[in-house]
Amino acid sequence: MNTNALERHITDTVKEWQMKIGYRSEEMKLYYPDVSLAGLLELSEGWTEASLKEALQEFSEETKERLGGVQISNAGDRYCVAVPAEGCTYIHENEPDSAFLRSFLGVITGLEPSMQAVEQCFADAAAAGNETYVKEDREAEGLGIVFYFCAEKDAKQTSEDSQIDAYVYCVEEDDFGITYHRFSWPDFQKLISENTQVKHQAETCIMCQ
Image 1 (cartoon, rainbow, N blue to C red):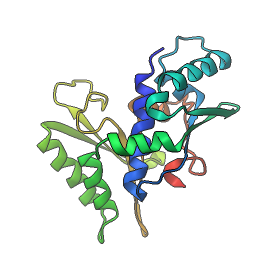
Image 2 (cartoon, helix red, strand yellow):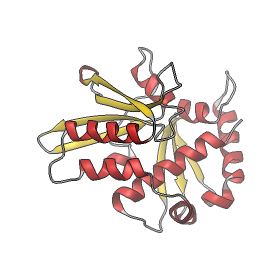
Image 3 (cartoon, helix red, strand yellow):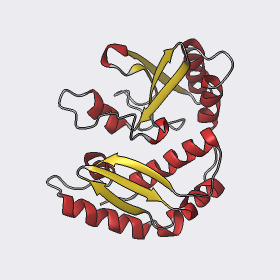
Image 4 (cartoon, one colour):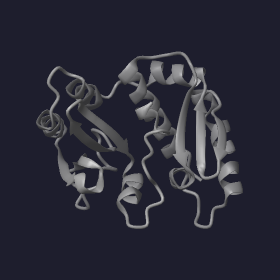
C-alpha cells in the first residue's frame, strides 16, 4: 500500500475547493468509487471490501498529523472521505495556491469566459513551464473539450508527470458560461474506456455542489 497518491488527491481537491469559494474552517466530504481508492492506494489485484477498509483505516492513521484523521464511510461501492476542519486548516495554511489553477479559475469566472480563453490559458502555462498541452474534442462522449499538460519528455502523452498540473480537465461551454470537472489520469482512462467503472455523477461530485 502507498498512501502518497491518495493524500495528494485529497489535498489537491480540498485546495481547489478553497480556491473556488474561499477557506472555511469546517469539515469537507469527498466522494470516491471504491476502484479509485484502491488504485490510489496501489492495492494489489484481488483486493476486497474488507482489505480496502483496512487500508483506508491505516491511511487515516498515517495522515492524521496533516489531515486530522479522516473519517471513512461507504454505501456499497461509493465511499465518503470526510476531512475534518483541522485537516482543511492544515491544507489552507501549508499548501500553496496553484498558479495555473488560479489563472484557469480567473478565466472561467471572468466577465467573458470562452473556450478560446481556456485554451490560451493552457498554452501560456505550457510555454512558461516548458511543457506541452493536449486538447481533445470529446463532446460526443459527453465530456466536452479535454485539456491536460504533458512533460516534453513524456512520449506517451499522459498528464501524470506534469509539473504544472497533473490533472485532466473536461471543459464545457454553454449559454451560461464555462463549467469543468477534473480527473486524475487513471480515473480519466477508466472514464473513457469501454468497460469503465468510474462515472461522473453531478449529484455526488463535490465540485458540482
